[in-house]
Amino acid sequence: MRSVLNAPPRPHDRAGNSTLFSWAVGPDHGRLVVACAPGPDGVLVVRISGDIDVTTLASFGSHLDEAIDERLPFVLDLTDVQFCCASALSILGVMAARARRLALPWAVTGNNSVRRPLTAMGMADRIPFCSDLDDAFGLVTTEFRLGGRSA
Image 1 (cartoon, rainbow, N blue to C red):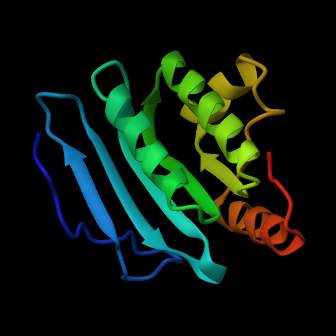
Image 2 (cartoon, rainbow, N blue to C red; image 1 turned 90 degrees about the vertical axis):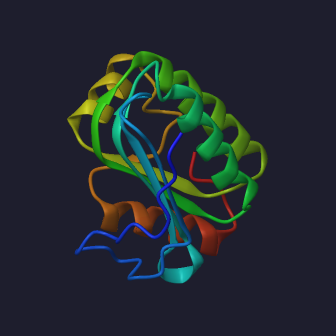
């Protein structure tokens, strides 16, 4: 496993240049990059890019656990995920149930490689999916202000 510390945020990053951590799995284990940064209104941004497949699934799950362990409202940004295997959906389902138990507002944003499997598996009612990052921030901050749950 190879670590990458201080990967630069994307240019349109609302979280700015304050990456808390960044981690990458090298090509011998698939390609998955995880970066975590504070966002507006105290919302944590967990940005994942690469492929979520059998080689990166365990890492994906452990990083989502770490995000929930922070006990902060968060946005899971999967916009740069090129492939999302069906097993990742079960991890998202477990994460959704845990966030619900903790009354932790959260949302997911991503492209068609994430949206299509969520829709096909009928998980749209459990996973708060937003079409873009701004909508995800809006949903999470609204839920946080109301003290409610987003999923």
